[in-house]
Image (cartoon, rainbow, N blue to C red; front, top):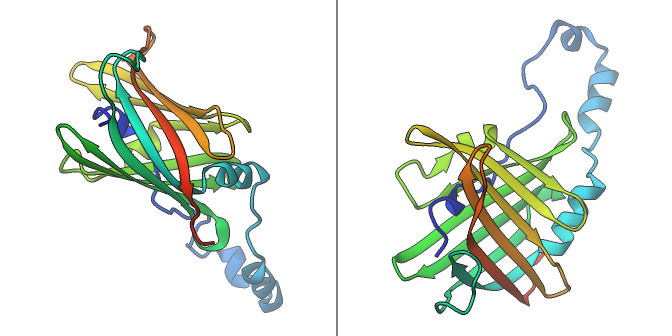
Length: 205
């Protein structure tokens, strides 16, 4: 199973990027203007759509621990389901890994923030009492360049400030490679997990 560090990888609750509080301007605007604004649909980012396209589906996973030598020990087995939320505005990951130290579950949600034109995310998992970590939203940076999805998360560990770097890449029509590295901020990173995913089915739109 993934280390607790991986379980910090960001994944997001659905958060609105628009303010719900009324302003004097909004309150004094003509009704026709308000109606038109309310009726305008939120457009999807082409980048976000391309990310959803490569990840959407049901996947089985082989989870290798350590420095990337996949021949040292047998892997843990897991599954991931990636689905698109209502309106196509969120990308939701549900993950289960049957680890030697117990079952682990992850709920990860990603969305496109139109106010900053960036990918956002936040994580929920069963690795501790916190369940959903709001810090994973504020402390993380996600990027999709069309070939690689990267997640960088800064988090405290005792007196140290640590960096978790995760990457999804090597995408084909039915596979991808996922890696996780960890280290102190400003220092070298060490590979701690390698996941090979194989597509086994589709999910409904």
